[in-house]
Length: 395
Image 1 (cartoon, one colour):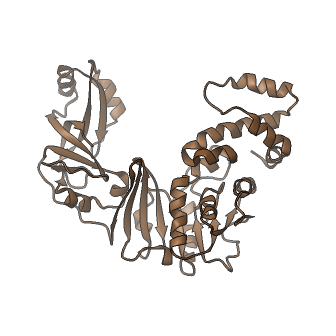
Image 2 (cartoon, rainbow, N blue to C red; image 1 turned 30 degrees about the vertical axis):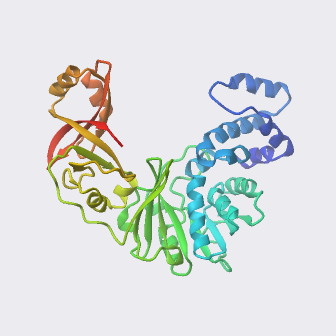
Image 3 (cartoon, rainbow, N blue to C red; image 1 turned 135 degrees about the horizontal axis):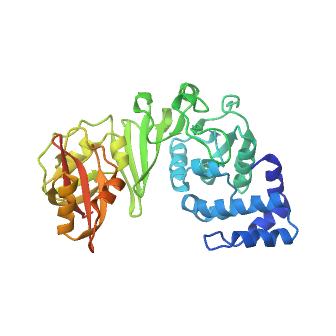
């Protein structure tokens, strides 16, 4: 979307037209809808803009819930936006630290700024892209404590601000299809971001797979997963970092949040013999390197050194890992494995793997599965040797 299209979209006619459209779903006849809107006299650029927004609003519901129907998005802005549930946790940090005026540097379409404003923080959303900043202005309009500035993070004057939140751009510029950048090309740069921590309490959103060697020693690093999907790593500095915590795995689940914390990476547990149960830690626990602490909670050992599977003889329910009952150890040989699965009538197979160089989709095709049964196969290493485990999910 360019500036001219945005002006048309933000016109009274454009917003009325957008709000008049039926909720977007896959059953809509988009070609007919375009034709009807053009026959009604709406210009092609406006028709394209409102249909794009309608589609993006539907796509945004998992992140923004009911708020999505009153927001504006770019494709790239939505992809990079923080889920509202997670943004509320970010905002809560600033509130808990007694901070009041926050600069959201690299605000995108304004998801984090919305959560901050909803918690009565005075927030200024700052974005270098003119179109994105305009959309943030629209999205933040219902919040009197929020304002928007079109500026780079580096050029924005932070005088009078208590703290800053930064979400460096990790993809190339643009509103549609973009590509990932290396850490050295983030905007603003990590040197600028971490340098700012010397003068202000700051929070920083980075990808969950960000190089851990680049985490400053003074930062609290928190990995967050939502319903099992790893979504971000947050770094917290100064008053926003919790005392005595440098590593955290926070799980947001349907039955409520759960968190593991530690002063540092935990030492892995010793390798143990295969027990009756196999545990697959949540991605946040793995990234936070708290697998050893989890193993000790479960009275479990590592299945193999350096591989994030745990094993134990007893089942201990935990929100921090998925548990499987080990049914059988099968040959790690494609032909023998195919015969073994055929003998057991398994036609639907979930394949999980760690520590072995295989493509589960390719393996599944080659196994030529037949039968009415279903199962889960874990391809991994046990004490350094390749192993295939037939398991069933229990928690």
